[in-house]
Amino acid sequence: MKRSRFPFIVTGFVLVFFYLPILFLVVDSFNASRFGGAWRGFSFKWYERLFHEPAIWEAAKNTLFIAVVVTFLSLVLGTVSALALHRFAKSRLQRFHYTLIYTPLVVPEILMGISLLMAFVAAGVRLGMATIILAHVTFCVSYVALVVLGRLQDFDFTIIEAARDLGATGWQAARRVLLPMLAPGLAAAGLIAFTLSVDDFVITFFVAGPGSTTLPIRVYSMIKHGATPMINALSTLLLALTFTTVIVSQRLSKSGAMEGGQ
Amino acid sequence: MKRLRKRAQELLLTAPSFVWLSLFFLIPTALVFILAFRPADPFGGIGKGWTTATIKGLADPQYLAIALRTLWVSFLSTGICMLLAVPTGYAVARASERRRNMLLLLVIVPFWTSFLIRVFAWKSILHPEGFMKKGLVLLGLADPSSQLLYNLGAVIMVTVYTFLPFAILPIYAAAEKFDFRLIEAARDLGATSFEAFRKIFLPGIRQGLITAVLVVFIPALGSYIIPDIVGGPGSELLGNKIAQRVFVDRNLPLAGGLSIVLILAVLAPLLAVLALQGKGSRIAPKREETET
Image (tube, rainbow over all chains, first blue to last red; front, side):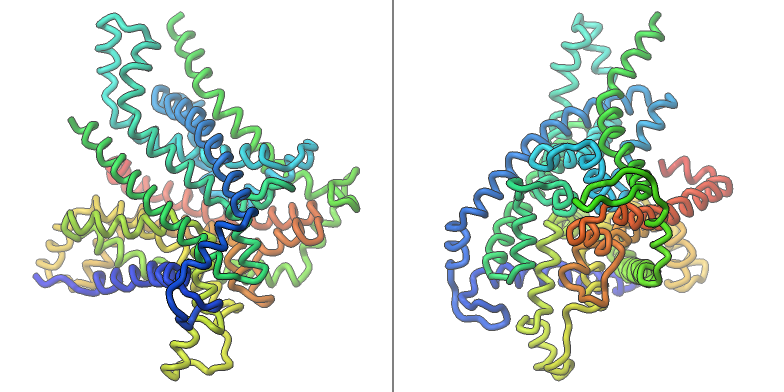
């Protein structure tokens, strides 16, 4: 029977639609012209300017610091929460716990931003790096918990029992059997948390204070106040980073899936 | 004794995330509802006492128009996303394994790419000096004086662009589990390919379709960067109004009042889906079981 070609044509169109704007942005970042649309020769000058912009470096430093702390905190909180969700799956508390983990994922970012801002203002907390970290952990925990939970559901818990039978204490079994087998899942979850934290603009914008400018906030103000081609260069660098992260995380989840299957 | 220990263990493992999300998610959300009834103080903070003036002020026709526009943009963007995402999800699920992995990777990369950068990419393309404008003028499809940027059309197109990957992935996930022999069976029994698609395939991937609609519609309702960057004064959405109350005139209670409108708009489709699923599981309890 002949299959319709229509879905494949739509897919081709969608992929062109996805990548054409990104391609133009990358090409334009090497364009010597101040305005896109006309090609004035290949040049690295926007990258050079970018590297001589102290504000960008400052923002990059802040972003990286926040992302590292957020990744660590949300990995700890998310993994512990996934363990609870998995081990006590049938309890009523866990059903509520699951809803609590799941809901932040469906709430529009702007609502999370405004509600956190109000909470910080009402509590009299100074806005800055600390409030950004608190906000980022809040939305990263859910992603980490769900990714790790997925891993735990594939995990064969009789192995832990076997370790216990062979004389391991509960802690030893967790540290030397469970943790190494969960490692690829943890790495994937950590990458997700890291990327989310680095990319987030909306929530960060609401809870940021003076001196806590992150890269996305910097990019936004560059877009709003006269778009210089430097944004193209900065975007291209960030795109390269995302591509690498996605490919690495795909590799990780694949090797993890193979381990689970064995 | 053992039961008690198990209970203690459960509480210990649940407490960290539970306390965190209560402090930084539940309580702040509740606070939005409370602070909307407080007056604003002149220093951009929250004043003392209670007032219903803010909530009453929301009846302003200006806000009604914006709420309706927000709904309209979200509906339209979701519709276009679904029209593109269903064939794409189908095609990815039916591709050979090697091609499927490649296609999936190509859909996932934009999914992870910075939102801001993807919106900005469109701003430079649609810009009067940009590629799209020049191309269309060259082909005689657009007037040199026409404006591609800063209007509702640009907002809808960029919304579709940014949320489409989110719609494709759940549809693909459902289509991958779908037994395509059912379509062949329907064809053998005399259904046209469109009939088979509509009556067999679409109901078969129902769960994926519902998820896809929600992951586009809900964020679109709260959309703020897209109209801010590619929209004009005539294409402001609810999110822009909330942000303006926060960043321009610093009126937090009013921002809270507008957020309540947004929360209600978000809850409506979620509750509708819950009701729908409750009905669906009564009709077809078996399918629900195999799906989860």
